[in-house]
Length: 149
Image (cartoon, rainbow, N blue to C red; front, side, top):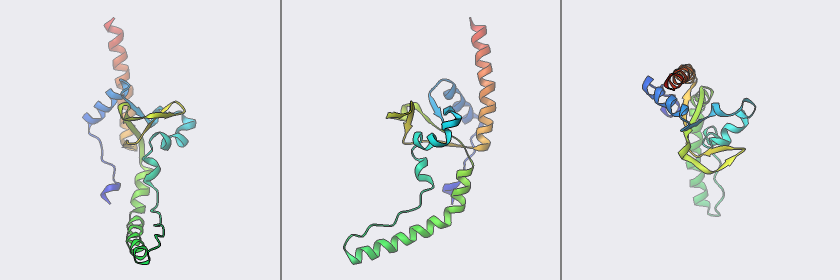
C-alpha cells in the first residue's frame, strides 16, 4: 500500500517548485479557473483519469483454456484492487495540487490549457505550505524588482 502515500516535500523542494512556478516553467491545477477546476483537471493531467479506475474484465479470446487462465489472473487483480481501495481513496482525497513542467506538455491543448501525460502531486498540507511560501516569494520578487530600477 506504499503506492498510495503522499511523500511530504522538503523546504528546499518547495522553494524550487515556487521559483519554477513564478518563472512560468510549471503549470499547476491552481492555474485553472475555479469553474473549470473539477471538470478540466483530469483532462489537463491525463493520468488522473486512471488513478481510481477499476480493472476491466478480460475479453473472450475463443480459446477456453486461455479464457480460464485470463479470468483466474484477473481475479487476483480484482482482489488486489479491492485491498487497496481504502488507501487509494484516502490518497485521492488528500490531493492538494497537481503540477508538471511545461516542457512535458503534449502537442495539443484543450480550451487553451496544456495537456500532460505525466504529473506530480502535492498533498493538501504541502499545498498550503506552497501557497503561503509562494505569496511571500512573490512579494519579495516584486520588492526586489521595484528597488532594482
